[in-house]
Each structure stands twice: as C-alpha cells, then as structure tokens.
Amino acid sequence: MGALDGLKVIDLTRVLGGPYCTQILADHGADVIKLEPPQGDETRDWGPPFKAGLSAYFSGVNRNKRSLGLDLGKPEGREVLFTLLEGADVLIENFKPGSLEKWGLGYREVLAERFPKLVHCQISGFGGNGPFGGQPGYDAAIQAWAGLLSVNGSPESGAMRLGIPLVDLGTGLYAAIGILSALYERERSGRGQSIEATLYDCGFALQHPHAPNFYQSGNAPKLTGNGHPNVFPYDLYRTKGRDVFLAVGNDRQFRRLMDVLGRPDVAGDPRFGSNAERSGHRETLNAILIPLIAEWDGEELATTLMRNGVPAGAALTVPDVAEHPQTLAREMVVRSGAYTGTGIPVKLSRTPGQVRRIPPGFGEQGRDILREAGLDDEAIDKLYAAGIALEQRRT
Image (cartoon, rainbow, N blue to C red; front, side, top):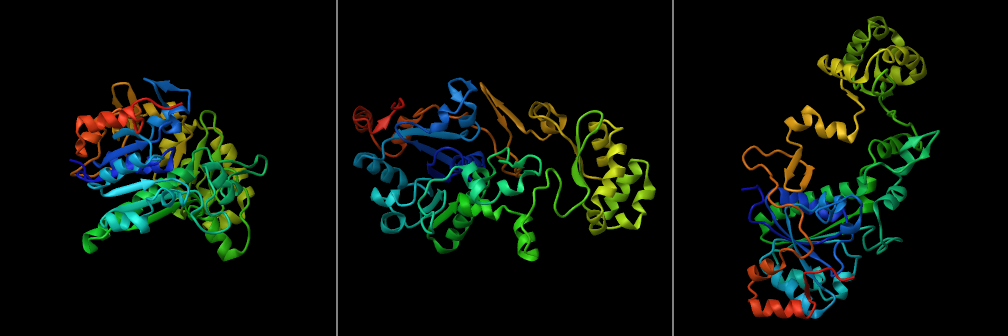
C-alpha cells in the first residue's frame, strides 16, 4: 500500500503542471480519476514520438491514473462530477479563473458548502487578480514574464528558454505540497480548503539566487552562461572527452580540486583563498584551470573528483543517463508493457511508491469509475448515448 492509499483525487487538469502534480499523488497510492474533456487532454497529440497510441509527452505525466471522458459543459456532466465528488478528498483543476463559477461549481459558493471536507486546488497562469488576472499562461511565456529567460543564457547567446518546462513542473510540485499540507490540516480541523498555485507566482518563487541577489545589491542579474553568479569555480569546462561541470562550493573542495589537477600551490595563492577572492579573480583562475582540465577526459575527471570529495559531473546525454549504472541502481527507469518512464524520485522506506497502471487511453476506465460511483448500467449507457460520457475523443 502506498502512503496515499485511500485518497481519492478528481483531476480536471490538462497539459503539464496539474498532471505532473497528480502523478506524484498517484505514484504514492492515491486513486486519481482523470476527467478529460470531450476532445481529450491536448498533450495526447503532442508528438511524435508515439507508442501504443500515446504520445511520450502525455505518457510522461499520466501514469497510475484512470480516465473518464466527461462533458462538463452540459448540466448532466456536472451532475456526474457532483456524484464523483461525494467520495472524493481532492479536486484539482486548471481552468481559467472564474470558469467553475460560471458553471455553477465555484468553490466558495457551491463546493465548500456541499463538500465541506473537500480540498480544492486551482492551477492557473496568473491567478484571478492583478493586471494579468484571468489571462492564460504556458510555461515559456511565464518564463519570460517571471524573469527566468533573463538569467538563462550567455552574453553571446542572449536570453534563452530553459531546456525543461521548469515553471510547469515547479508549479506541479508546489501544488502537491499545498494539497498535502491542506490534507494534514484537515486532520485537525475536519475541514477542507481551497489552494491556489499560479505559474507566475511559482516561476518568480524559483528565482534563487537571482531575486535575493537583487534585493540585497540592487543590481539586475546578468547572463553568466553556465557560470554561477555567487560561487566560483562553478562552471562547465572543456576536456578531451565529455565536458565536465565543476561545482566547487567551499575552500576545502577547492584545495582538493587543485590537488587532483596537480597544482596544490594554486590553492595557497591569496587571490584564491576564499570563494569571495576566487569570484573576484575569475579570469585569472580560469587561465590556470582551463589548460589543466583540457588534459583530462571529462568522465574520468568527474569520477576522480567525486572520489576526492569534490562535486563534479560529466555532461551526459539523456540516453547516457537512462543506461547509467547509477540510474539503474536507483530504480529510476521503470517499465511496464509498452510503457517506459522515469522512476519515482522520493523513496519512502515502508510505503514506497510504485507504477501500478500505465498511462490510460482516453476514457479507458470510464464505465468502471461510474459504476463505483453508484450508477447502474442503464444510467451509464444513457450517459454515453447522450454524449455526456465519452469513450472516443470528440474531434
């Protein structure tokens, strides 16, 4: 049994932030019912690649869930939702603010009164207030508005989008934390509450150390490429093999780095005696480091440094990482039939998460979900015949 076994989650989210959140809950045992609109979650079409009829993008954030196609635009569909909420602990959605209210499903007006123990979580681009309140937001656009593009890239490249959808993923993580916090508080109060997680808020909250640096110095962050604005050497270096990233965080690690590189005398130079001094003499120190590191193979140097207590990493590709012995030892690749995905990163000792279900086809478990909610076969057939519940995506 997972840590969240017995928790029932009604998931109205699509695309990434919300599904990433609910996959975390599902991995740890929650029963996540994914209610998809008639057209389905649009990421089902975000490919290639596709495998067994599912896009990789959809598959990556929708395992361990069950799918029911449901038209909430019709009163009968909303009644089905109310029926499902009777036994639910959590409702999570990422509609534009005001959408649930328009449908007569607002949390304060309806849900809190009818389901006082329900925890409601809304994910949106900007929230419902402020000059951008109610506006849509996707990850890259929020990266721009939240200043993340301005701190990613080099002077030569200019500002660049982060290579992963960090804002969406970060918002999913924040939302999961909020949901679990509200459930913990419910144990004391017996009452649910509403949670709001916006991409904009979460994107700006991820601005570390750049926002603290600005608040303290008053200076706008500059593009530093792979380098770190506060720590040195903390950068990517060329070798005769793979590039290597040095992540030297203290003076002891710097001394050990120079021992491995055969220049212990450099660590004794007063210009490099502390991080502040090293940061103030970056060009001078790099003139020493670059030719020394260039003589090594990156993977060999990284493993040698780590054995000597110096954080370092060879710049591996995704295929490299997927086959790496450390990845396999940590069970970070999971397979089930045609499905292959990343493993579960948070390991619980007594109740570990697991992959119980592969990502669902559209509406694949719909009839089972409706039966569990107390509907008989005749009522279920009527819902499908009327197009309220769906087993095929509507084009």
